[in-house]
Length: 270
Ligand SMILES: C[S@@+](CC[C@H](N)C(=O)[O-])C[C@H]1O[C@@H](n2cnc3c(N)ncnc32)[C@H](O)[C@@H]1O
Image 1: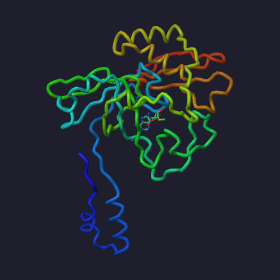
Image 2: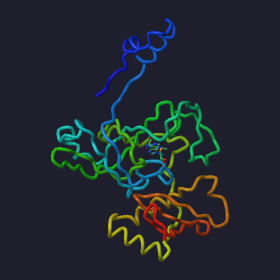
Image 3: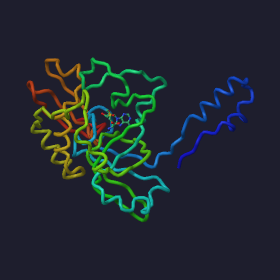
Image 4: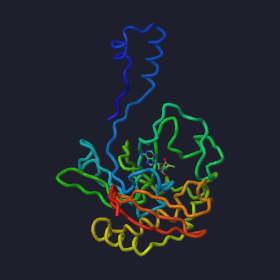
């Protein structure tokens, strides 16, 4: 449902304003839209660190989109299952800022070159709205309430979703498009290994709760989630990221490798 913020409600409330202030308020209100999320994402990514920079880069990254009533009815998703992919329009709810900046520094460019915000896919934009094409793996409807099971997501836990649209290849796949500074997909260059302890812990959690956990960790880490300024630094660097409710620790190994050193339930120490 879409609703406009209607100026006259403000007129009733802000009786103390002078005429100019009132006009400015009215213009602002009539100029804005108020969208209600149709659902919320439950993702394997529980924090921003480690999330790939685009959808599709880590196919093993799963999420469910829980539709809110009344959008969760089977009628609303009828025939959607025939599409292999969907576009999600969502809110970067953890990138809300009062001020926006006309230029941003995409990590893709090493974080040291600025481009116009509208030439970027940065979460920090005038309207913090994101757009991802993700794999539609399944639609589950239980007792009349439907949710979507998705793959290849780049979305944080709790992301509010504004809309779903089917991905339509004839219109959406533009083979001769020019990709500017992001012409090529970033290559997964790093070799990921597991210490003996980490491999054992990973097998345990795969069997217990998270099938496909090892491949998820390998795919995420091979894209090198280190901040650009840390990637060139020498010495032993240890990092941690959260996947599901696990704290995954890893360290840099040589020039082109990362070793996963341990997996712990969040909040639990050895
Ligand atoms: C560069 S954006 C691209 C998102 C989308 N595919 C787009 O192009 O609009 C991807 C990054 O957004 C961040 N992100 C994902 N969900 C978010 C959320 N709900 N709030 C804030 N940042 C989020 C993650 O750090 C991720 O690496």
